Length: 397
Ligand SMILES: Cc1ncc(COP(=O)(O)O)c(C=O)c1O
Image (cartoon, rainbow, N blue to C red; front, top):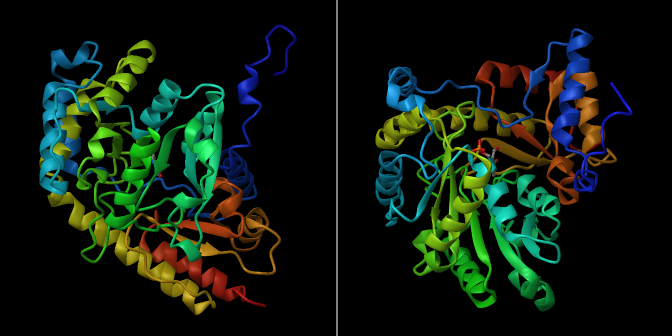
């Protein structure tokens, strides 16, 4: 309802490009209204349930009175210790649970708040593009500028550090990277991280590594942590999420680990705005970390099987696509005859009742691509491919 009684929202909200995922929601609703048998491969919202032992741990934790009070801002000591032990076991990285860990209400929350803790008008964030929306949007909301660094097949989806103008590097405070990458699924070799750490040190930039897909990896590939680069802790902070690793997207829990000064800055901002992660959920997260490896093999085997169905399916339709090494996505070019990614997305929705994410959702650089999320089981993915085949959809022609 539009009313004359309310003041205008802050102008910073108007400066943002439309959030394509909200538009997708509207398209989805319209499809449901016309009775479509919709196959949703849009959002990266895991369909698998949280492993049962984690749920049971949370159920027990909910009943404990000590969990009914305000949580500690930083996260429980046991949570931070479990994080440190996990980082050591999984990545061979040493993290001080006292000063180098911050519990988060999901990593998106932390990425957004870290940006507000550093960026003010005139400052820059460096963001490889296409990008996960909060990497750019939080900077815009904070009144800063973003320099997008194109990720293309030609540069193996790694940003070209030499292309950054020195006057912008001088104004940059944050450099966001995220590998395995959403949406492109690219991975980064340690040699790239070494160059990046050196670059950020030379220009006094906080290196923000978003490792949301650090545990979703296939065929023996294991993504490195930024802290596998010696000395990275002098400028880097890494964001981890339980959402994809343990199918805990709905519980809202993650953590940041790394440089103690950066962690303290994030902590100071958060103490003003929230009360941290619900204690019972932290208990579930502790359980997930302490028993993590036993869940991951099964979760990753499931995604790998789904990946193969989607990749082989699109190959049968004329696409050239290599198997991905991580993430729960497949990133593909749109057929040449379509004007842009939204037109292709609308066509698929109208003609075969399949919802994908148009690449424009990840910025202009994504507009000739689309992303398929592996968030339905194999028979549903096969059905989606069969619908495209029946419609005679081909990459070319
Ligand atoms: C690259 C990336 N970072 C962060 C997030 C947010 O994760 P969380 O659920 O921990 O907030 C996502 C979610 O899709 C993501 O793709």
